[in-house]
Amino acid sequence: MKRTVIVGAVGVLAGIILTLMVVMGLAADFEPRTGELAALRLKETSAFGADDAVAAAPAAPPMEMMEEAEGGG
Image (cartoon, rainbow, N blue to C red):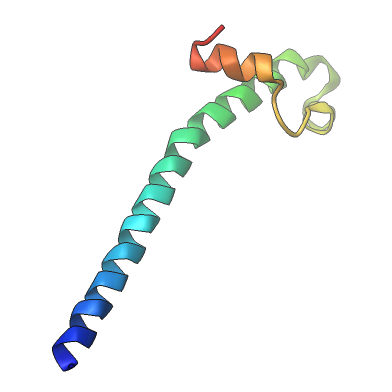
C-alpha cells in the first residue's frame, strides 16, 4: 500500500514536470516570433512615435503575416 502511494506520487510529479517542460518549450517557440513581429510593426509605424505606434498596433497579427512568418503561402 505504502509503495503504491509513493509510486503514484512520483508519477504525478513526473507528469507535472513533463507538462511544464512542454508548456515552456511551446512558449519559447512562439516568443521570438511574436517579438520579431512587434519590432517590425514598431519600425513601420515609427513616424508616429513609440507611444502612438504601440497603441496603434493591433493585438494580434493578421493571418497573412503569420503565414508569411511560417513560410506558408
